Length: 359
Image 1 (cartoon, rainbow, N blue to C red):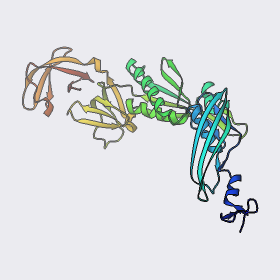
Image 2: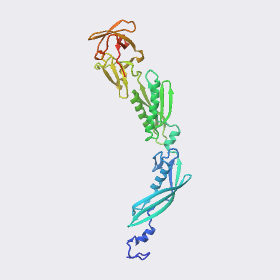
Image 3: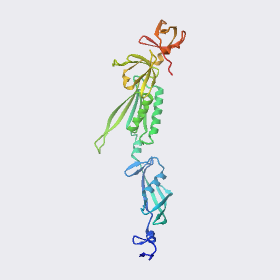
Image 4: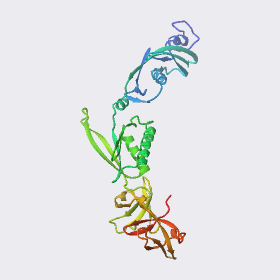
């Protein structure tokens, strides 16, 4: 067969003409002369296929990605190599150069293209919310029957900001709108409810406490008719702190810790750890049993006294109030105490307790 356009009889016929004549009209790829990319002017996230994604990427990367999406390589091309270059920026328009190389029916061809990428700048929904002070959750940090300590406030402020900074890599609404410093505690206004939940979990892990949620209807979505809610998340810290003295109460008669006097030695998100002042044995208390605990005295009310006598089963100390001798049952942890030693004690419900050393 011969080519009707050039008369060649040696080359294979493709779509009615020889390979060379076919390749004269063939293009490795198709690309529009003008390309538009919609990006957020605040965070550089791009709008594609009906959604916003890939925030905080450089404009140059946005342009290259727009070029890559716009290029359509002919399926006949093999071993293709595409090189992209931004020649210059004119305001929001990038003049771009594309060099394409590939093999078609055994012959290597090379083509050059030029196109413009126009950046359409707007504001994405997330940045719009951020700029307007939008928030979905309020974390209320409180303490039972007391004010938050200076240390608790400083730690919580740092932890909230640190946690949100980590979460912001995946959640654009993981931001802090404001901190309301109130007499009763701190209120943290958080952009997204999802991040607010994780922040309050981090606070609970640090301080312990009880979490409760309270949704409040703020408006109604006109398009769906559904209510729009904000969530108030309360983290209630215990009235006691490390070192304080508590009584363990319970209506359950099978509770072996019933009415024990103990000193708090640690508090975290999983449990309250105390030490029995009679036996010096550790007691682990779940947060679900928090309501069974009663604060008896603060740690700063402990006193000092002297050991005046010691026997295998008893140890005698002086009551720091009136200096009368008081005999106490000795336990394993008291065996190293000697007559004349000064010890810390606490008086609770007219009973004296020698205190263990807490780190």
